[in-house]
Length: 550
Image (cartoon, rainbow, N blue to C red):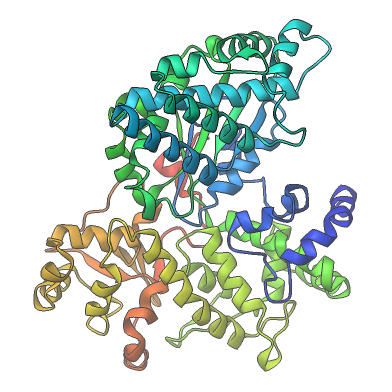
């Protein structure tokens, strides 16, 4: 560990010790929970040496960071704040949505349903207020005093410790009061005056000030965790947000006082396109879709194991580092992780496996999945297992324990699109093998009455299974494994050929669907599924598919 890292660790050890605990050696699965202990304390938990991070902080910053639940959208949004070439101001998305929803309901009572352009104007004025407050808070001696005074007077009613989210709520409540007075929306916004300064004059001061700043301002909004379940309620709010964002990013960069960056969940991205009234216009801007490789996930996990042992078991860490140095692994964090795990293990199907490959097979290449499984595995204290010398039985038992919660998380993430998914999977339980002809799935679909249950035709049913990552398409068979492509590593939909393709169950769902069949499958020497992309020493599939710049 470098001197700089040791110094940072000592400075943040109190907060880190509450995150990296014996019950959670790899930290919480949800990034936002860790940030409650302070972003400075948690910065060491995120690995910056990966391609997604480099893409997120490039000069042409992505407007939208898109990823599945647990992909680390929040972490990358915060990561982009660490790049010194831009000033980042973050809003608490839930609070802002709630205040905006109240404004729109007030507007509807007075004038009727707002048009999307009107909602976009409110969003634009809100972002202008955030930019104005940023210009006020980051004043420099080179700034013209008159313009700074205008902003100081405009925000004079706010407390000295006001956050940018507080500013957003303050503006929206002031606007709502003017709407209640039956001012038309343009007049309500233009005539808003606080501290003796009109909004229009404060905005002009902000534009002039920011035009002379060397670091551009980026206003960021994180993903709302329960957005999928509240999407209908927030339709008007989001439609206006997308229209506003499209206007901001379409302006010439020299005429743009600030940029906008936000996280969106890929599970409901089709629904988001439906909400945007003119997607080609409203959803302008660049996208960064998060795809992880196995080695990036292992590097992240190995770094956290090092921090955990440094905090709680420094003597064991020294011994483990010496053991790791003898392994045939060039990446120190991955080598440390390997040293803590058994060299080999036997899976539930009686297949001898590399423990890292086994753990990765049970993820959908999501940080949340791997962290959840590793926490379960490394926190087991039975049968002689410790976080620096994990036993094979701990790998098996810990993975099995984590699977149920991970499956429920996947189903919850897709609850808006597939509300009957759990019931459909129960109809499939015990009726499949780990690998089977695609045509067999059609017969089960008909026999089990899935059309009537879920109101899905067969193609929609197949799409649901691929979206959830329950099944993939087999492309190769080895002595132990069926290698399969799964939807989560592809940018376009996978479509199986019913007459010729074989499908495979994902390891994460195998026990969920085939618990009672495991003894039979073991006796039949069934092949396990090896999802494409989970090889600990595999190539970076994102380059091959052209997802990211080299």
